[in-house]
Length: 106
Length: 120
Image 1 (cartoon, each protein chain N blue to C red):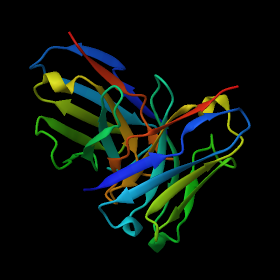
Image 2 (image 1 turned 180 degrees about the vertical axis):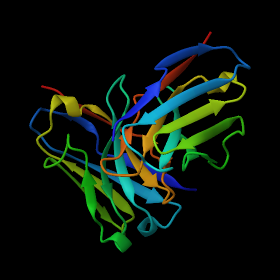
Image 3 (image 1 turned 45 degrees about the vertical axis):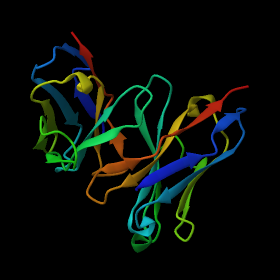
């Protein structure tokens, strides 16, 4: 299953609402997760089963979608949110990640 | 504290072998599928392999890029995960992460990663 993410990168300001889209090449139910990765660090789980917020993750992060189309939304971008975001499908093998979306400071 | 600590990375020549280890603490290792994920320098994340838990007969799965060259294994009594990497290629150069499957369709715990460099 191929995952595409859009955009591949974006520039935004603190306080902006940011939306990242992930599309699967075939239906994956809700078996999708979102991760945040900062330079030199391991990824950090944000959202699982498409819309469930991982414990300890700020509520400004939310996820939605099912089937083939998914969205990660950051309601009000904070300085610590500048990072790269990846979606991942865990519906079938091989497990796959999207190519990533880099969120940069405008 | 839940912790995954990888070791065994380093510099190896093309065609060589390397064995990565991941020591686990802070949770019941035998209750979880465990995975390896890698990230080449400046690139995205790539899932490498999975060792399913005892209840799933320790079945393994691999990415096509490593199938036949890499072997994932685990020792529940030692709380350790391994990745035996054979016939290494330059394109296997990456940071390798040991990862816990949450059993809720996500990877919830990641190690700090160990660097593998394949070069002559």
